[in-house]
Image 1 (cartoon, rainbow, N blue to C red):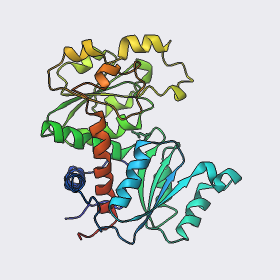
Image 2: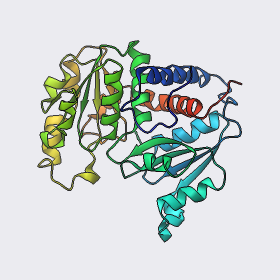
Image 3: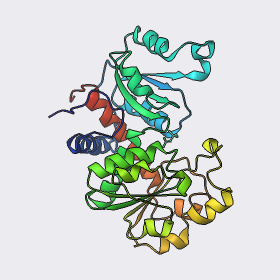
Length: 308
Ligand code: CP
């Protein structure tokens, strides 16, 4: 059975079967990536446009690498040297790119809903690489892949997601995806950065870090998005660090095999202490490694790839 969706816009509403298929396929590509020859011919002849309207290191490079590993032809679009700077609209931009015969678009944008909007403007397959405060589905998939790889399962595990929940599309995608997969998700941060709608959707929240991490199998720290803190959601960075920085003392209060995760980039010493980020419980770089396999899986399943 193939995947039941045409585009990947988010994990909200995606079935357990489709998430499992993406994770299982990513595991297969992970094996391919351990070989000396890491390239497969599955998307040969397909053109994928990477349309990044926001900065990115991990997501952008891993999508491009995934496309190359699948033998697709990647095209990179950068706002900074495009006709967006001359006032061209998003609709006109995508229509003009589509006129050059492309197959798939990977898009990152500061506005929530842009990936959905693009599905209304083009016949190309759309993959969301992060849209505003909405979702970052491939990040959540690589997070789940990493947990399953390290702990052998997802069902029943407790994940504490801690930090700037309000601005985090990573928290949103993980809350939906992990709940669908039977994980127990708890969200934690300053009350002003905890959107109330999560609780009505059955995802518990607390502003007490010790309560959040109690019994956790996984601690996922989020970046404090300092560029989006104009509203004064907490008094000072120092106060935030005192209450929400995950440090060695907190790590040592947890079982020996707890996983420490972060989507990156890390504000070292603010949400996560350096000795924890670089320590034995950290799987942060494994998350990055798995990002290539997950993105290969998503592109392969949505791009109609064939085994070769
Ligand atoms: N995790 C993540 O989205 O990182 P980048 O912003 O560097 O892509």
